[in-house]
Image (cartoon, rainbow, N blue to C red; front, side, top):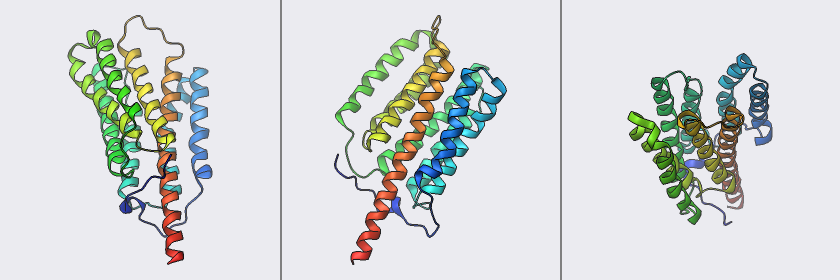
Length: 241
């Protein structure tokens, strides 16, 4: 894979000291593992509490490890994580109204990610594999469409943005591309579990969350890695000059 060029604005340095990604992401990993264990053990209260902590832990990891806290790329990444947190704390299964509200938060999160991938990941085109997401969207709408009723248009629009986010994630490094794909898989499982009658997924909540957390974590990790790599490159150039 050829090195990626990051726009100068995405790498604006900060005087603040940063932690290494492994240390800064460790709390997010711990909370994620605990959440998944609580889910498998059907400990509802602990599952709910830990779910509220997931995205804040990821946001703190980004803030602690990015060398470009004032950049537009970091702002978009944190916006996507925050909007995802609003979606997390919305009870999606309570009613159609709550489902649409949660869907709206995640839609905005995907738009933020899409803007990040379009503006903040250099100038590489999406990989050819991105075309598979067009086929995914057609299959997604065809599969769920008969059961959506009045939600057909908003869910189809959501799917289009979700597919575009995953497609443009392929402009990034492998962690970012895989993260976008996992996020798409998570939302596909969520929609299928919510609308397809008779579908009995094994541990559906666990599968939805493990792909969701993997997707969010890999996207954030990949973006931070690019920022740190670009920051080191600029620092080295300044030393040479």
